[in-house]
Length: 382
Image (tube, rainbow, N blue to C red; front, side):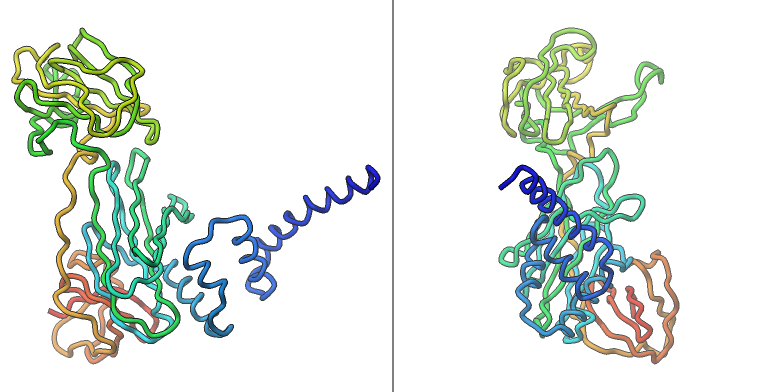
C-alpha cells in the first residue's frame, strides 16, 4: 500500500466515527437517527442494564417506541421528594406508566442510597446542573436493585432518579431512599450528639467565627481517620496545639484535627478509614476547656463539617395504603394535586369531585396519581 493510500484509509477511519457522531446528534427521531444513536452508545458509551435490555430488542417497534416515550416522560417530570423517602408503586399494565421519576436534593457531605424491593425495575440516577443538563452518575444492576451516590461539591446536589419496569405486566415494588454521612465519625464511640460548638459560633468576642465542630469526649479517647487518605501535616503549637492534617484525594478535601493530647501518625503516612491517628486532648488555646476535638474540613476555604458527620436518616414513613389502579376523586372536600407529597407542596391544580384518576403509587398518606389530562402529582384524600 502506498503512503497516499495509507493516508486516505487513515483519514476515512477518522472521519467515519466523526460522521456517525454527527448523525447521532442531528439524527432526530428518524429510524436511522435512532439506530445510529444506539450504535454510538454501545460503541463509545457505558451501557446501562436498561440499554443492554433495549438493544436485545425483545419486543416490536411499536412497543419499543411506547416504552421509550414513557422513559422520556419520566425524565421531564418535576415531582419532588425529600429524604428519607419510601414509595410503593403498584402493578400497572399501562405502558406509559412503566417509568417514574423522583427529583430530590442531596445535602453536601451525604451519601444517597436507594433500594428497590419486589419486582426490581431498571434504576438510573442523574445529577441535574443549574442550567438543566442531566448527567447520569449511577445505576443499579437488576439483581441487587441498589445504588449509592455521594455528591462532591460544596453545595447540595440536585438529583433525578428514574425507575422503569420492563414493557410487560410487572408486580408492585417499593423504593426506599435515605442519606447517610459520607465520613466516619472522627471520635471513637461518639456521634453528632457530642458536638458542643458548631460552625459559625462566635470566637474572640465576635472577631472571628468558628470554622469547625468541637466534639467533646474524655481525654485519651481515640481519634479516627474519617476516610482513606494521607497525612499532610503533623504540628505542635499555635491555637490548635497538637494538630494533624489529613488529605482525602478522592474527595479533594483536607481534614483538620486540633487540640490533640497525642499524635500517632507522621507526615506522608497513608491511613485507612477508621485508623487511630491520635487521642483527644485540650492543647493549644483549649487549655482552659474540657478535652475535645476541633474538627474542620477545608477545600478552597472552610466547610461546615456537620452534614458530613450527622447520623444516617431514620426510617422513612411507611405508606399508609397500597396503590390501586383507577379511582375517583371524592365529591366532598378540596383535594389538591401537588408537586411534592406534603401539605405545603406547590399546587398544580385543584382536582374536581368525581374526576377519575389513576393511582400509581403511595407514600405516607399521599397518592402519586395521573389525571386524564396527562398530569402527574401527589394528592391526599384524608
